[in-house]
Amino acid sequence: MADDLLASNLFSLKGKVALITGGGRGIGKVIAKAFVRNGARVYIASRKKEILDMAAAELNALGPGDCFGIKADLNSKEACERLATEIGDREKGKLDILVNNSGTVFDGTLFDFPEEWWENIYNLNVKSVFYLTIACFPLLEKASHKPDDPSRVIIIGSISGIGEGDLRGIVEAKRVTSVPYNTSKAAVHSIAKNLAVHFTPRGVNVNVIAPGVIFTNMTSDKDIQACISEVPQGRLGVESDIAGSALFLASHAGSWVSGIIIPVDGGTLLRNKELGMKMAKL
Image: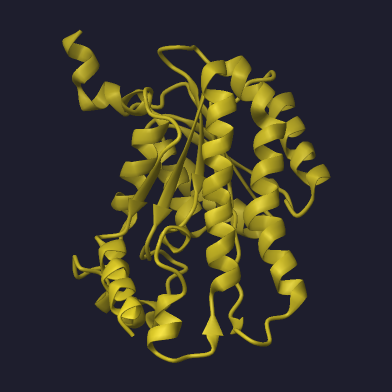
């Protein structure tokens, strides 16, 4: 029993198979790296094969797990089903961990936001998450060792889907809006909670990681300067912050956790709450 409490056992992913969308860079690559370093066989999927190939080579050099890239554009139900079929063919119909990480954002003005951008945001941030999870469910259910070791679905949401609205744009009197992105993340949080109701009794946990701004190879200097003052902890998130949460939810340590949203934001939501209270007094 004592061995179950060792970190090396609690957080090990040895022998597990994971699929991570958008796994070639940014947060997806961070999670892929954490999983490979802890023994998993990881498939990363995105539209750009050259990015996947570079990421897979880098992670395979680290080990002890391994990594493979699969080119996939997840903007349709059919594409999601094709990816699930390919994973099933490669892994004899089983998948232990699905990480829905792919997403997009567009900067636009509040009163002139192009309709096609709404569609692009919702296709990738919301619809593909639903259809890929549904398509992968038979693989996840088959791999599950319920009740002690369920399969896992981890959805990368955002604190933007939890907070007090488009506060930054309002307070600074800007017309630039993140309303479509924010609402897509709120929608995907709802999808996760609803799927958890259906999947948890069948041996598949569903949870959300809701990051603030994480410093990765996709973070610009502009992001750093604009966002760091909004974080009560005084810094942006780093690789280990997001990796730790993902490992917790994917490993034995998180086997009794389903249907929750974990903000990983250095207290940023506390700041948003403060701004919301100020706005209420205006």
